[in-house]
Image (cartoon, rainbow, N blue to C red; front, side, top):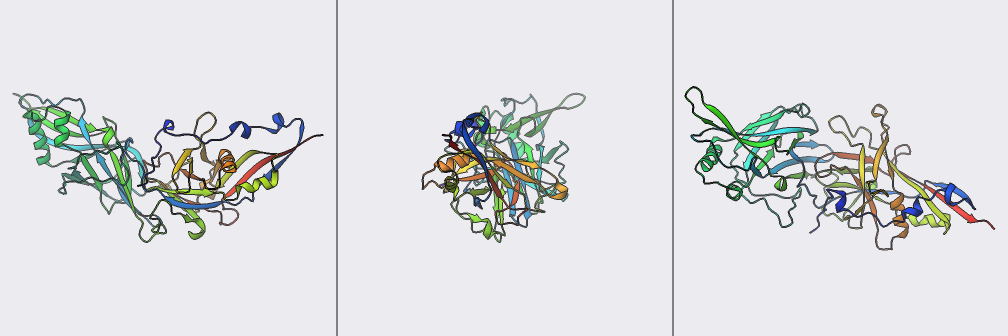
Length: 437
């Protein structure tokens, strides 16, 4: 079983084994006593392809991702949120003489959305019947749990994700009254009692939805609220008891129906779709695990140019988002993290700077009107690693956004076989020197 252990913090990563001091040598400092010439090489072959991770970690994030939309290239993408709950204040007591009123799920938008939100959206809430647990305390985009198929709530609504509002979904009174009675009768007195009876909820998106929406998991942002009253001589006093997201046991189940798409044959992580077989395009989609892979098969040909007297000064990989492949509702990130993957497309390392900060592929110029977006990826360290790799390592590069496990952002790039002004290119600057007699 292969899982991508998607890196959630830099401390979980190891940097590449690279002679960074050698890479950082400059002509002015190191070559003062020797004859030196600078060579720009832009003819080294690049091979771009697309692969799909078997699964990615989606637990432990600060976002509940719910929705569905259909993309003409990527197929139908759907995300359902699984949420475990705990009392917000760790108390299970109600006021004396309490009387049940109602119950609701309240979810605050975190301003993330993908695709068109103009049409009405629909969410359905189910009660989870399995313990939301795993052997390694991790949950993946492929993880599922059994539910009671009778809904405890549903709502059709107009999404307003950018206004900072909350979505209020009334839940079934039978569900609410049972919870109230168990609390009021002291049948639930502690966390274990509660979790034995209430495993969690699944927030499911309708197949007819047109957007995927993000909601905050913060304690005061998303919760189930139990409303009850205490009778008074003049007017009933209203009380609320909240059950917030258990941050260790929430995750998003994200899937894509790729039937009929160019990705339909990517059934194993080891498989790749070369850009030359995909109209000179390569692809990435967060959440479902589609990712870009870059191979430089003949990198050791650099030794034909420099022999043993060369120093790599810089290596820049440039690639462009395909024309008309993005919009305000299908936006793309300004930067992508850089990873090294092996021949089975398993992540072996994240590429880091000398100071430990991540290496990014960043958009170096942005003019949406004239479609001049270009990513610039400094891959000096990777080229040095390739020059030293053994025959059977077959290391490659992969790029994807930091939100790879908390979004469904997609990206279409022009590959190495595109027309000259659009194609993916690699520019290498080499310093070649000879000792003076």
